[in-house]
Image 1 (cartoon, rainbow, N blue to C red):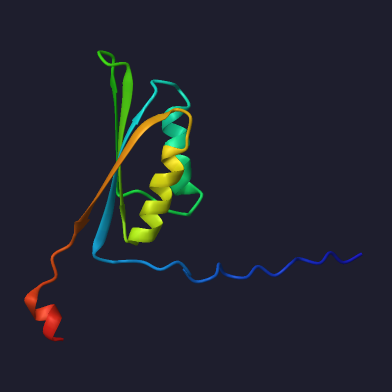
Image 2: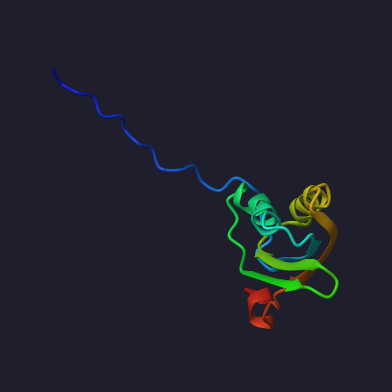
Length: 111
């Protein structure tokens, strides 16, 4: 009896819009719970995003977990959506967002 091996297709090309010069920054203030950090990062992982930077600090004085996440190439609409999702999480107290833009060299503009 001959077994049939399914043919694997390559993954589809990236379909989401991107902004190559933009880095979205998220400052999340959460409950000091063991599930807080993985749940925050889950919103990025679900979208296939790998953060450029993740920093987490536990502040015992005010009993809070501070998580800073930076993700390159996110459009404003996508980062706004992720921020709204994070704000809806029960363990999250506050989400602040900002953005950084990469400087484009003068020579690149005339090309």
